[in-house]
Image 1: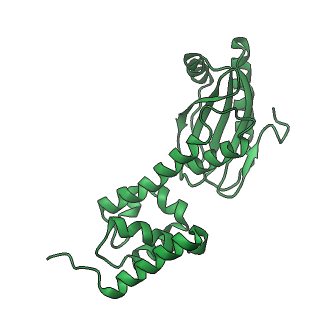
Image 2: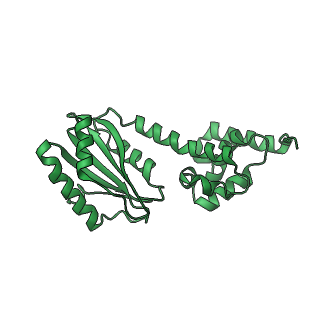
Image 3: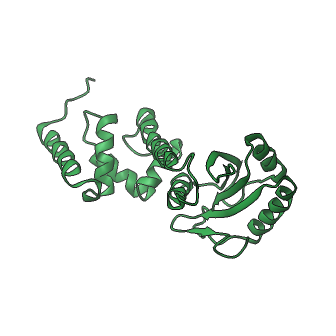
Length: 229
């Protein structure tokens, strides 16, 4: 069956959305409308408003859509493998753009950008992930690596492996980052004990742990701010 051309009313709707975006910016559009604009590119000859609304209803917001597992995206009517790949591209682009704001820059002077980057990468993740940010002697970010992935409430972490990677990067300091998919950013006792263990392992190598950030859906906890370091 040939793919139909979008009827005039759909073309007009798309034009109006584009005009609102260009004239008033993204804040003038609802999440589903921004998603519509994106889906126009992936599905150019179909009314994508129902798909956009179904995705937001299923996953909550744009971040939830962009980080949803492919198998769950495919369960939404109208979403095929090509569209699912396009949707995952949103998250990849967001992370890359956020990372460009912090890589190679002193973290102290770009702390808000660093938090934004960490939240972009982890706030919508459905399983726990442990990342390590490696810093040079001037506290510039030189690398970000995922060193533990797990279930909804646990990601295995091996302090000696972290030290090994720090030495490989010739890093002088670390910032630890992990997420709590449960939604509560409060550090657990296991989080505290692991951090203390890592600090002890790092000390003989003159590697400093500056902070440990816990990312939840709505907020972020800092070990340093909480007096846990």
